[in-house]
Length: 462
Image 1 (cartoon, rainbow, N blue to C red):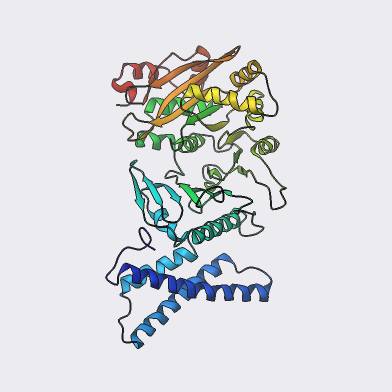
Image 2: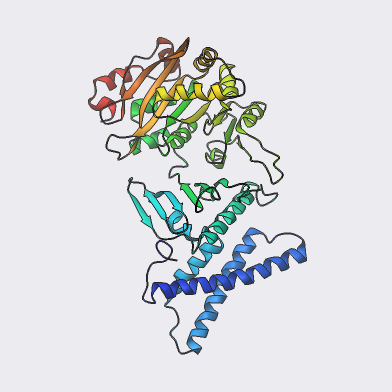
């Protein structure tokens, strides 16, 4: 392998790659025999920790054997630094994410996109992009790598027992899963010329609104307003394009939820990970949709999960992303007293998010009339927050906050209380309604902050 997999060395990159392939093949064959022997003897798979320990022992033994072979042949063994790289590379391939592992280890990388095994592109945290080396020796090896990651993800979700089936073949060519580090992987095959994958990484899994102020994503006024909105149990919809920071903001808003509240999260792929931090969220039930099995049965969509989640006595329901039919049960729940819900939606503006809700509702099985849909949206959603990029594209920022006021026939009435300023950052816009201000003030928001922001240079961002 080349590119990000192994740096060049005095031994020659091609020689080093050949050693990696040889050691990997040798260890893989021995490991397969060991795991089969364990299953035959015990009737159960080799536990993950034992498999990892066995793999590392076999790598060490294989490297020792290779060194002895080279010396017996009168050739110099690998230098210690090269041998260490080879060992790490083989371990990454057999235990980690193979050729993807160095990219996942690089904290600067936010996105990985591979169009086949050797057309690999990354986007860094500063917005720059680059093409890097292959992630596998062939497309077939790339497919096997992704299938192994899918199997590992299934075991991880169930603690190693009763792993959820994760098909990826011609009959089920689309795969979504969460990697061990929290990254989200999407892969597709058969309907493309070559297998392709995209990985999105989240640099801020544990994040608060105060952290977002430090990062320049929100300003102090927006922090206070949003925190009060969460405490007041307003239903908040976060809009934005792919990679705009919607999930990060949702996590930060969730961090403002009181400690003692019960939360149900609904996602198509585990991503929010609110249940991972018991100190902040001790009572969380994460739900994930499921595709059909090999017999074409067992599908559980997000709409079904939402109805089930409401029966679990939640104080709040958080939907990772609104994509379609789940919009009607979600809006119904919001309008019937299950306030404090949070969700995200793909939209190019805060106003566009409301139109997207109506479009999803129009396509739902309930087939509500437009006027009825608008009334439902107006009764359900209190605030729409939009995330975007600064005008120069240098950073993710909150660009708009829209208060939903009422339904007016075929339209939803709203006030854009924060609108995009010249540089893209949200600045005070239309005055909030008296009702909203009164609610926010009851939960600790000082309305004078809005006047201060209007008078301050940069709308309060300075």
